[in-house]
Length: 274
Image (cartoon, rainbow, N blue to C red; front, side, top):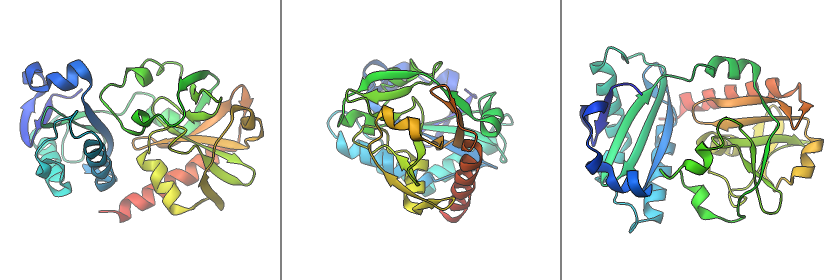
């Protein structure tokens, strides 16, 4: 975590924050967050991120105290981000990395971190996904559709990166990413009620309708169906798309190319959105 942060637009130092100002978020996970990719000082898909945050707040009006509405306005967030980057030499106006915007206790907290050490390697080489966590979710569980501060269930699985499945042995997501599979002539992603997070990159690919000539659609994905997958990749707003080189001990050599097509589409769309 880098030192410069912002609370409701006011620039602070991470070490100067007071726990009592975020007690509901800290003790009860009563809040939400979103993680943005920053390229050359600019946030990608900012409006989509803020719309998802506002939707989560609207769905839980009594449980989470929202910040002032202007703090989730795209122009306000861009201005706060710009001032943070310009003020801190460790960031700089051309910063490439990650911003996290968390809302709880009536505050909007903006923090920054560099990309993970293996970021470039993952984009180039992909990752193997060989573990399964059966019954991690319940079908239709709505809490998974919101990126809440109570995130330990996903965080605990980060070292293994397993396929998180529901009680019906259907694939839901990875701990920090959505999933796409080349199955039966289409690019298939589990539906939101599987459940999974309605990820930003996931939504952009669904809106696009096609990737590398493949139609994109939501479908239930039973674990047994993965034996027919020709390729697969994961998506999130930071990495965009990462190929799955091995899926349940089976090599998928076409995944890297398919993920590269998805990244190119996502990057092109990011440049067209405000």
